Length: 183
Image 1 (spheres, rainbow, N blue to C red):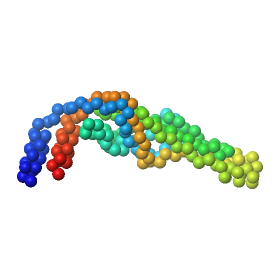
Image 2 (tube, rainbow, N blue to C red; image 1 turned 60 degrees about the vertical axis):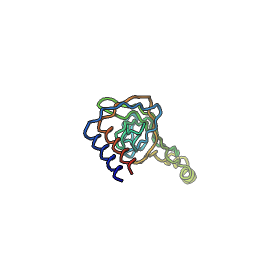
Image 3 (cartoon, one colour; image 1 turned 45 degrees about the vertical axis):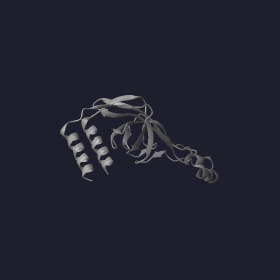
Image 4 (cartoon, rainbow, N blue to C red; image 1 turned 180 degrees about the vertical axis):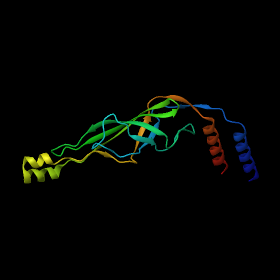
């Protein structure tokens, strides 16, 4: 028991006494990155090319180190919008990931997308056509495509990339692994 405490204390003291140098980590191509949409996105009012707010949904870990932290922003683009239309035609919307900023003006390219299609006006269209003729069919519309806030989807790193992790990240990763090993 005393040996484990002494080893843990020595490791923590050593990590905090000497600032760790920044270390390079290579993030492999196609590393999965969970992304969470932070706002409701709908074909009802979205505009193609508009940005949608999103974030990293979970820590991304490579070689035992956190390379992208949960909550970091992700730049996304509303890549496709089709408004709902008459005759029960549903709306559609698609959001694609662009990149995740990692430091200053540097960013990691991401590839991933999510889309939504509204419900068709099928049964309502048939009833409206029978009851009101062609006028009813024109009035009946499909539903908008909606991606609710909190929706999570998977994107991937679109390039193999070496990045420098800050010293604080290194020290906290070392302390966490040392603490876990001592338990």
